[in-house]
Image 1 (cartoon, one colour):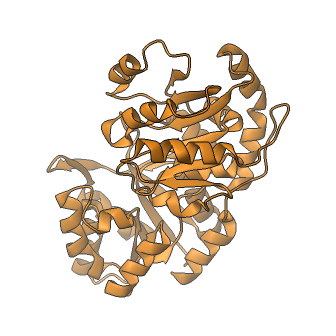
Image 2 (image 1 turned 120 degrees about the vertical axis):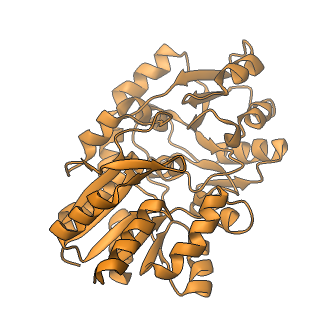
Length: 363
């Protein structure tokens, strides 16, 4: 591949390292549909800070409640860039528009979807009817898909003969460097929130129903009394969750955080927990593991395959309160660094550079 285009939903921290690599190694320009998402858990400023490319934005219109790039904008972009490959977002209307324009002009560029489908979605619990319909319309016309889970690769390969593997993961060199720089902030959080001597159970994400946080609060009643659940994020469920937690000293709401403020929590956490009943992937799992934090992860999260029970975490069924509690307790028993806050050894089973190079070689 000589010159390429990456068309994304938003410049998000879980995609920045892939875009950095494509920009620097494959002459790839990066365009996005949104400057920011209203309910995003991350800071646009932080994403721009860690991006080595200049984010560009597509001209858009809204169709059926979804933002899609204007055909005229895509036409000009494809004509001026003459790409070898166009990476498109998911199985979206923008992806369909790029395929339509290629058909109209008999273009020779490849179209590759960056798709977060997991097995839960492929076996009856899809995100929406639109997603199910678009899969039928788009897959056969794509040249390939980049998929985040080995099982979904096998599923797509068996049905369509397409699909290569690359999980949502950070460049460990960048992220671990930033985590080390955030250690003073970690020390500050310990003192500010009175957490010295406590076991810290960390949740990072939106406070919304599919995250299954009521069961997580119930599960905390079965965990070590020294454990404190720290919830990083905002969402519609916060008032109800705060009411459920009451004045418990074992539950701490710290709001939405990003950049060093968030990385400081990964440094402190004894366990990251992701209890979702629906989760396409869950980038927080790969971030936590990269920082050496064990993870207790719902079996319905696409990132669950990163967890090897007993080595770097445990997997649980999200409908079971006792299952969530047992996974947290098991993860707490995984040997961890003692003493002052420091950067722990990575628990991530994959390397960013080798994974992305393997993926691109298969495309």
